[in-house]
Length: 151
View 1 (cartoon, rainbow, N blue to C red):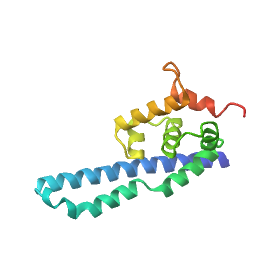
View 2 (cartoon, helix red, strand yellow):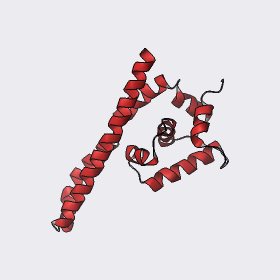
View 3 (cartoon, rainbow, N blue to C red):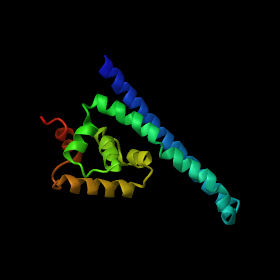
View 4 (cartoon, rainbow, N blue to C red):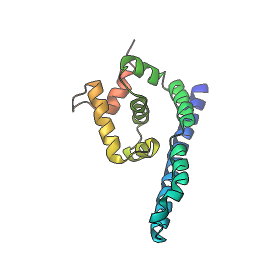
C-alpha cells in the first residue's frame, strides 16, 4: 500500500513538473511575442528580471530533490545504484536517466530539463557513450536491466 501511494505521488509530482514547465514556457513565449508586437526590443533589458525569475523557477532544485526521493523509493534506489555503477554520470545525466526510466517522451523531458529536443537527443547520445551501449541496445531496456541486476 505504501509503495502504491509512493508511485501515485511520483506520478503526481512528475506530471506537475511537466505541466509547470509547459506553463512557464508558454509565459516566456507570450512575453517574447508581446515584446516583439509592441516593438519593445530596445527595452528588453527591462524584462531581464522577469526572464530570470522564469528561469530560476524552471530549474527548481527543490522539485527535483522531492522527485528523486519518491523516485528512489518507488524504483529501488535507481539513482543511487546508477551513480554507484557509473560514477561519471553528472546530475543532469541522472535526471535524464530517471525521466527515461519513467518512459517520458523527449518533448516532456525537454520541458523538465528546460532544454531543446535536440538537447535531449544529444544528452541521450552522451549517456549511451558513458554506458558504452551499441546501437542495437535500447536505452530504456538497459536502464530497466542495469538496476535490477544483483549487486
